[in-house]
Image (cartoon, rainbow, N blue to C red; front, top):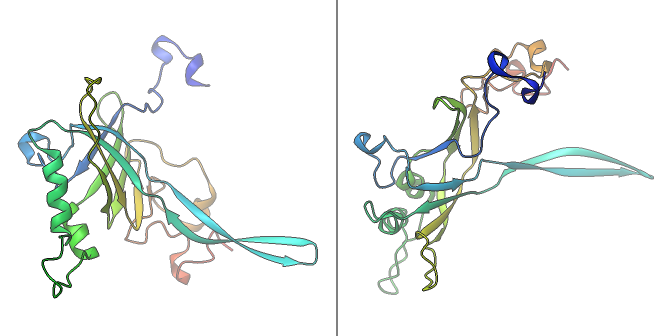
Length: 221
């Protein structure tokens, strides 16, 4: 039965709502436990991770056959309000500096940004969609994330809006946990013994549908 046909005691959990979410970046300003344990209470919006799988074509006579190619994860955009305390403009600038960026001091200054510094400067990035009780419905963790774009906002005499900043974070991939749901309704992985259908793309190999043969072809084939 659809949730829109239920009433009173029959009502189950709400469907997922777009305004119920938290963003955690461990190295952003205000990340001490007393201020929320890394939760960015000044976040205004956040993209969920998303990806695209490229297609490789093979043509034979008048036939075309498609094969999956590389998986590319798209950058995540996060909008933030600058509350002054903490100063988010300063915090973002500090993170970029810690990643290795600085104007050259002279012709012999050959240093530049590097991935190890950029990921360490930002820290862990976790986007969690929650329910009405604050329980996690989706927990997205970005792996090897670093800031690729910073927009410090704009100024306008005719506007009384709060100042907003926007960042884009690139990453290698993201994992998904759905700890408080029944997991996937898809039955295909059951045939090959995948034990946990609520965790996806983990680094421990638990998402591999056929780990004994090195990762493929999977699904009992």
